[in-house]
Image 1 (cartoon, rainbow, N blue to C red):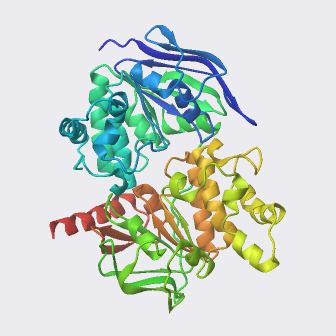
Image 2: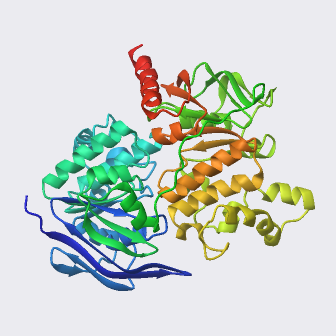
Image 3: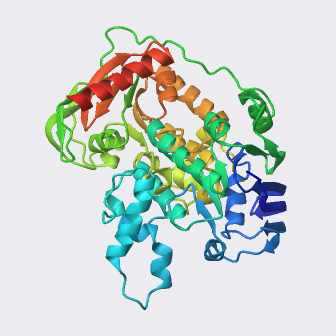
Length: 507
């Protein structure tokens, strides 16, 4: 297959208030090729994608599409030139159906014409089938899991038949089997002549899928459009962070015998369909809750927090029954925190400041204690945690939406540290963050557990689960299927986990 240059960005510069995001960045995309764009959070990857797709306009530099310089005034113009994108942030309308979201551009272009919903659903079903998705196209997006929303985003981009397709963390919420299916489809697109730009913090995925790579570090090129062949993981890590990767391996953690559960679920059933759920997490313990997409793990966490009611059974905190009716009650009465998998939709208020987001959990106790509340008091409370987590921000007044995904995730963790929770539910903590931040969060979770925090860890990242958890509970179809004591052996533990899942499916 002969490859030609499909797209070039040369000398791109972009600044935001207090931040020089891009400093003369360049990359080249070829036809019949999948190109990786790698770098730490804050390196400039998402900013570059938003410039290529017309969301932002560059301060300097050129964009060249198939030999012609282009200036996209808006994302719609980029789409008209068949430059498609799957952003890290979801851009779906929850009350619209899957089919309506996939064909949103067509609906917008034909406001004066009646919509042929039968054809709309038929075309959407074709793209869903191509991705191996068993979803009724008439289903409202609000009823989908986060992972299925991500796959619908991908189907939406594919339906535009883009010549250049940019994918920003497309596998962040996907299971390994869903990722394999997506990769198979992306390879077919590449072989048909498309040019794909793939952004991921999962280096193994980039090495497996991509033909070439551009690495950004601190808003500049660490390497530009280099062949992936011959580059090892440590080579890429050095380009990304300027040094080799640290150890960060599994270590056995011993919870002293006789330590009582900090939180325990007894014979719990929920309005969402959970049945006979029994689990406990002791003080100082990290318990993993693993399952495939749709297993009911995130939903169980939200039931614990009172967002959905229990229909049977009890939740006990420190051995006493606890009737939790809201996240506020969970925090202020029982000192239970929740790091949401959807940090942009649930974990943070993007248009508020760093201080406002990190301090939201301490407003009530501070005002109750002192009778008044000032920014100075909140700043005094949260600054140590912002510094401890090494959040990169010009100031605490910076709008959270202007920060990288990794720094946003650090803030979503910092607010619970500031509140001094003793039980922490952590849902997909490393989605969309770089390897350095991921390692830092792993160390932080271990440190919290070592200091007595009870942690229930929900993650679709099996290596992460095996790296961190002391015990691993497996859930499928809203029921617990069994428990494994983690011995740190990836081969043995992953086989045991999948055996429990498949055993339940065969039952």
